[in-house]
Length: 53
Image (cartoon, rainbow, N blue to C red; front, side, top):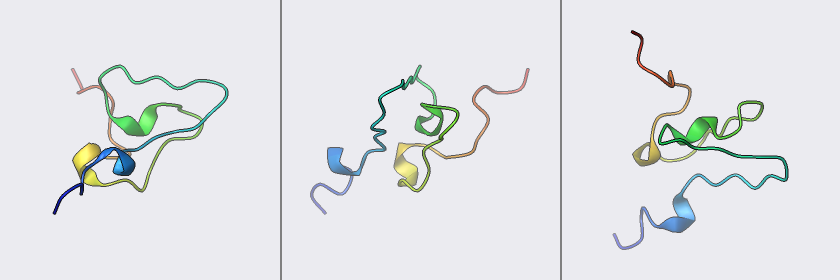
């Protein structure tokens, strides 16, 4: 199916304060308002950000 994972389906916050993504999952780009509800191909929501040591 063409375009199924295209840019229109990416998680994308629109905020005036800040967003950050340091090669980690998309869901924590802004901790006070985490992203959820996007397709799993973009990463899992509500997961740990760093593996336990």
